[in-house]
Image (cartoon, rainbow, N blue to C red):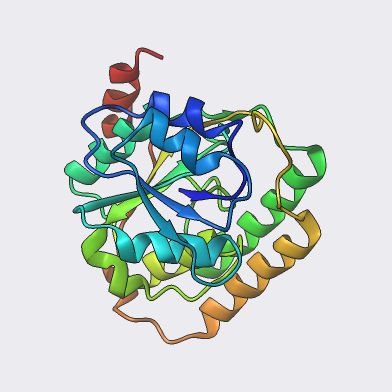
Length: 243
């Protein structure tokens, strides 16, 4: 989880993480408030690493390299994503999938935070992505994802900003990874302001999507299998959540 001045949010997030999660990594972007003190008071076992570079993408790549577990889950530290959903992502990874994306726009998902302008932008970017890559994804610009750490080198991430979410999906598709989407509820940030800038970051997502299409594929695209979380596997996950 990237963090920078999330002292008013991090306690709630850490409280929701199950005790059986083996490793919690906070990538600190030079917080000047009590973020780290608060985090350690709630989870003494939390691992803090200093962010290398600037931007969300840089923070996530720093965290990925520091991770030691077989499964990596990425999520925000502002309270907009529920750690209780993590088990659904892990469920798919344990059942043959390689890369799992949260979706706010499939059945069972939703957003209490997205503005009409951002919704339109997301639909446009998603349409471009699906048309270029022959996929049927329902959400592109959402940062709740999970994947097997063994694929980190294959993803070969370089993005520094919010466009890293699109870059990961581009690389996963081109590498023939088996992808699943699972429903996710996006909640409003609990406190503070987001660093997201819709127009600037949307343009970077578009550039990443187009640039990825021009790049040579790493594997035969015929090996790519796309599965939506509306499959029977997702039904099991939803049933397990009690929702």
